Image 1 (spheres, rainbow, N blue to C red):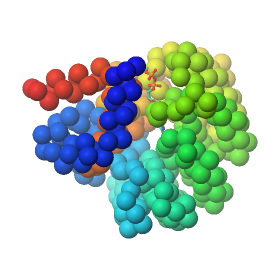
Image 2 (image 1 turned 90 degrees about the vertical axis):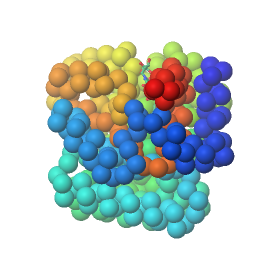
Image 3 (image 1 turned 60 degrees about the horizontal axis):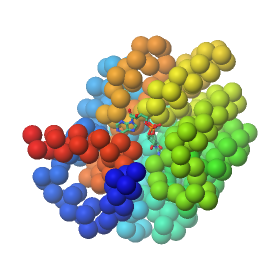
Length: 303
Ligand SMILES: Cc1cc2nc3c(=O)[nH]c(=O)nc-3n(C[C@H](O)[C@H](O)[C@H](O)COP(=O)(O)OP(=O)(O)OC[C@H]3O[C@@H](n4cnc5c(N)ncnc54)[C@H](O)[C@@H]3O)c2cc1C
């Protein structure tokens, strides 16, 4: 718990971030969890996954960008990614964060950028997935996603089982026919708004899984927790859902054995593939989820 909090604290340290992201020595740390620096690296990873029957969602790493220009550049990069993967005919969606599109500068900026990306996705048939960030972003993210869904209809939004509010949000998304990606939640939240004990988060995760599979539109069950996956598989069997009706999602480099098992069982599995230079906050969240990863990457680094 202390190590987890320390890692999450370090993830917000801008000096450490600057140093790590620009240090050639730190690069080998990322290899297991980040597909590389460039879109070409990411496309190679997507092809390898696809050869094993796995779908992908590409995340051009970046969050809390500096200003308007940077946010517009991030949107431009996503539009490029969409055109590239659609020309190549790869089984890919894109995943993005609204803070990357300028939400902190002005909500209208993020809205404009998201619309550009969603329009490109609509034109080419590439789906857009919006990650859920820390709690101050939740209302704004859901509002922009709803707006985008009404206009373009090709958007999925992440929801976090650790938040008390999420059951209400899921019911609303289900009513509006908006696709949701259910995850446990990766940020530090207060006890006033979020469960902290794992059994509580897990119980809510199971409940929301059932709600999404029963009433949702093409939900994604995003977890590496075998007990959550067991529950989802049992519900899929009970509801006799065809594999086109839902997906499992997992992170690049995590529980690769489980990813392949689900594919062998006939489920659709999408891998969230992050790539790019701004890898530090992403990697630190993965360390916080499983501090043993810290030992794993340090061991590889020393090698
Ligand atoms: C596709 C996808 C998209 C996501 N999008 C978001 C988002 O938009 N917003 C958000 O807040 N969170 C997001 N997350 C992160 C999520 O909220 C959790 O923090 C993370 O998935 C760990 O939870 P878990 O369900 O795997 O279960 P846990 O109970 O944390 O872990 C269960 C088991 O999974 C394995 N495992 C879990 N995490 C790791 C890891 N980092 N390294 C190695 N093994 C691990 C371990 O074997 C562990 O025992 C996403 C997760 C996935 C899979």
